[in-house]
Image (cartoon, rainbow, N blue to C red; front, side):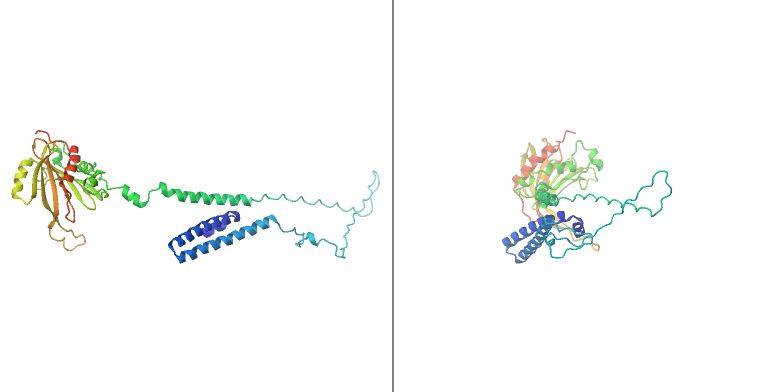
Length: 366
């Protein structure tokens, strides 16, 4: 297709275009070959430069032909050379043309004229057709070179205004999905001013979240929010969740709208498997630190068995904060874990809680 298009172009457009492209490619390939010490690339560059030299030679010959046009040809097709118009001792016999003698006109009243009729006068020769204006070769060449220069400038400037693939990846971290069209469970209608999973996701998915975790170079791989209900409550307790995943850590924030206070929850921990229990106050609210193992299970999507058994996953660190200062019930849990088992400092969870808790309305008196 490209060859057909090049053949359709006029000579004074096609040849300068090929010269410009061939010279640019040849010089660029030769530079890369010299820098990388690649003999194959050097041979390819020489090939492009040789092709360009042939095109330049063709253009030079065409320009010389236009400057020194060939001598005019006679009607029979033989060229008449001015240098050969010398006397050689033989002069061709000039051809004469006998003009017809005018005949006397008959006088008025005279009888019929005897004799042959006069020969008709020769028809005038047709006027030569005006010569057509040929296109300016230099103008076409300059236009072709200007076109190539404009295309090269556009290709050179375009990457500066168009983001590369790496820039697009780093500039587009995971965002929370839009769940405004989803209908909330009935438990959210019975709860005064409940927060939704989408709101928790947006409050957690902050630009500085990775820096708070101690991994400032990471970006969010995934972000999600769900409007769940608490387990073993028959769907009567709202428990929205928001989760953001990085390459190193995964952070989960949940709000449980039950009647269990933080003080009661600390007492129940004595009968559980929680470790490193530590009570404190966060933004004037009762809070508690504790550690527990996550659950690990596999789901087989290929058919056959449903998956492997539920196993103990890596250790997770949780900061549970009461939903109001008077600890009337309910809590906001901020949990972090990693597949490697490594955990950030407790100060990271405190920093995250100070950023997320203002987005959750305090629970009012019932």
